[in-house]
Amino acid sequence: MKPLHVTVILVFFILASCAIPEPPNQAALVYGISIYGNSSNAPNLVVADDDANAVRDLLNSQGFIVTTKINNEATKYAMLQDIMNLKGFQGQVIFYYSGHGFLDSNNTAYICPKDIWNDTNQNYDYSKLISASELFKTFRQADLKNVIVLLDSCFSGGFVNEGGTIDAVPPIFGPNEQPEGSIKYSFLLQALDPAYSAYCNYASYGLIIVISSGGSQEPVYESGGHGIFTYYFLQTPQYGDIDRDGVISTTEIYYYTAESIQRTWNRYYQDCYDIYTEQYADFHPHITGSPREYILFKR
Image (cartoon, rainbow, N blue to C red; front, side):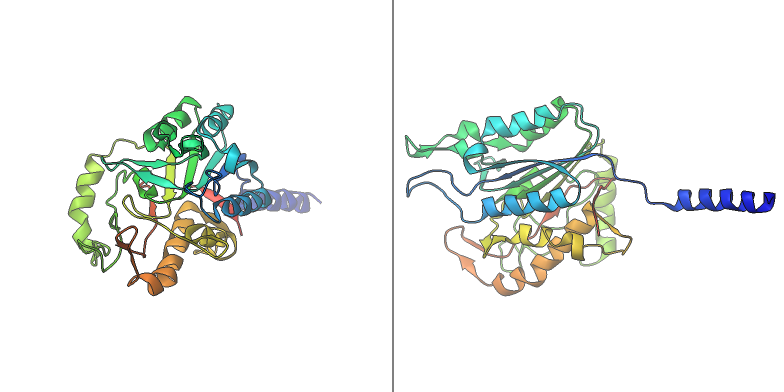
């Protein structure tokens, strides 16, 4: 009986060593703002709150503990305090935002909590904007180690740090933009010299990965029931497993959303000129240049 006993033990250890480890504890902070004010002058959107509700449901189904704030609840204080309430949390944290973005005269990008609009004065309160530096500083103060930021907002590429890489996607994407906004490197070797220089100057950007819906100077759009970026993000657990290993990483989420937007929205709207933004309506997601990636979903 001894050989059988040994064989059983060996099989047990072999199977145990091949098992996919359980992901770490996962928390998510989800915000969506469609209603900024009650007057006709307020900069209201249509589906940003629907985006947040759908992302909340997706993350709940994937085992995340989700805090959600919609419309009036999504103030600057509440959003930053939610981050601090996770102080010391050692698992993964997703910060998802759908709403307006803002770009100032210095090309600094911001996200726009609900209270950036003052209904009483019928005007903007710019002190309520949240910049990338303020958002990331709050993550550091909360001692959060593994953060993924997902932004479905205009100019959100301003939250993306190139890190030790060269970002080949321009801040305003599209063949009709001036200067011409196509991807910079059609041939891989063209990127070697600038990529090497960037890597030499790279000093540990940190543990935050940002996936933005568009470039740092680029408006993004909503259509139908969702923002275009969020519509494809919601599909990633089903269709985003590019390497078929059963899990979906941040790189795969970026690839799937970017390729889907390029294949569908950009294909039809690259020649559509938006007179309000004075840009063409195509856009392209960006991702932080980081040596790490995170697994978010199981397929």
